[in-house]
Amino acid sequence: MQPTESKRAPLTFDSIESGAGLAAAMKKSRADIIAELSASRLRGRGGAGFPTGTKWNLAAAAHVREGQFKYVVCNADEGEPGTFKDRVLLLEHADLVLEGMTIASRAIGAKKGILYLRAEYAYLRPHLEEVLARRRATGRLGQGILRVTGFDFDVEIRMGAGAYVCGEETALIESLEGNRGEPRNRPPFPVDTGFLGQPTVVNNVETFAAVTAILARGAEWFRSMGTAASAGFKLFSVSGDCERPGVYEFPLGTTIAELLERVGGTGAKAVQVGGASGTCVPASQFDRRIAFEDLATGGAIIVFAPGRDMLHVARNFMEFFVHESCGQCTPCRAGNAKLLEGIGMLERGECSTAYLQELLALCETMQVASKCGLGQSSPNAFVSIVRHFPDEILGRTPTAAGGVR
Amino acid sequence: MLANPQQQLLDDVQAIVGRLGRTRPALLPILEEVQARHGCVPDAAMQAVADALGIHPSEVHGVVSFYAFLHHEARGRFQLRLCRTIGCDLAGTARVARQLENELGIAFGETTRDGRFSLEWASCLGQCDQGPALLANERVYTRVTPERVHEVIEDCRRVFGAHAAQPAPAH
Image (tube, rainbow over all chains, first blue to last red; front, side):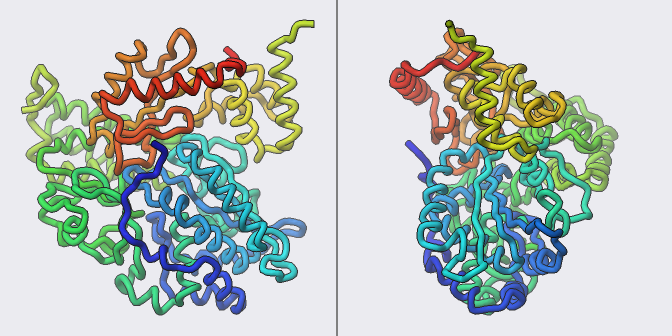
């Protein structure tokens, strides 16, 4: 009964030979490793889509104080509702992920790596420790990696403790430093002032695996997939009302309709792209593309069948954010609670149009004024559901049985 | 001399801190280990950790209260955490929740009187494609149905039986 029984489609990662990426990296100068990444146009797979080459360049150029060193952090705090592809990667392709971290250490000159694993995935830890031990035993981690004098890098696993906000990179660093997971002001950015104040690269699990693939196969190969602004392939976590939920790979730029066809979700009434912090897309817009220039996502795709109550979906997301807001800044702490209260009024059929407009104005305030991505994106689902499913929102008449007519 | 549980806790904290280091970045690993051994991070342990790290106890309390998987009061030997996020919700969490309450005779947020089970909600467990999902301590159960709830609980009881010789968590 242990996980993961996740069904998954064949992945490009299955065909990447472990060791090929690092071997290719060792033949390049540090600058050339980063140049290769920049040429691949790889963007962060966690969802924010920051160009990986640019991030590494900044970290490589950052000054490190005497006696200190730079860090490479793998963000395995996969907490976005609807996202589970990193779990599958950590279970099946941990070597590619750790190899990507090792390549990063080579490129920026880091000595130490940390894999921040969410507490909910604690059962993956023995497997990961095993992979780490094997890599140390075969000279792929530790002192003098691949017998190259001075190439020292090792990875330590640190556990999260059940906080969604720690997926935000500065909150993650706060957590590593032994603090509450409260996001920092940016700038300074982690590439300059990260873990213990030192230059730190924080990347998503899938980003590191993609780095390994790019070094093994070349930037041109990667760039030949996807769109101009969103290069390469991407893993998707597909759940909800479809025949074949699981982990899939598509080139970026794939339309929602194409994706639904493959997962057995045609006939859906809506798709949530990007998890709870993403956007709810109605059937009339299923020709839209999943790519950074249209619908950006860390890979979460949640399918809703025609019978689903979209206000209930909005409530579920908002309950999540009320619970997961770190409480540090007012727009997010108070805003999410106020929106949830508003959803309650809508459910009971007690919300005027004027008040709904006020709620939408509050959403805008939160998007603009929240300190981190959590509060900036938490209203997205509510706003898109109100916009696209107006007939499900106002004038509801709840029945005694708890249903809605 | 009879062992004093309070003293044992404090000795244990000293040993853990000694091993993991008296530094702030070691705080979370320290707290996780204290909880793994004692079932929770009691006030006395927070004070001891704070003293060892040279920080105010409110700093330690702030961290314990921030994270959902750390707590300062004892929970059940098995913490059942049912995912309440959307993927599982669509797959039927509500009925599983009801049946969990029926089988255990407690509501969410409570612990059974024998100290064996506590029941709580969890945010997305990352098993959205095979919900409803629940965590029993570190073990994951997927595609849980109301009919299977009994089976999950019996599974935990069997583990409990196998570990009955071990000391119960501190209360």
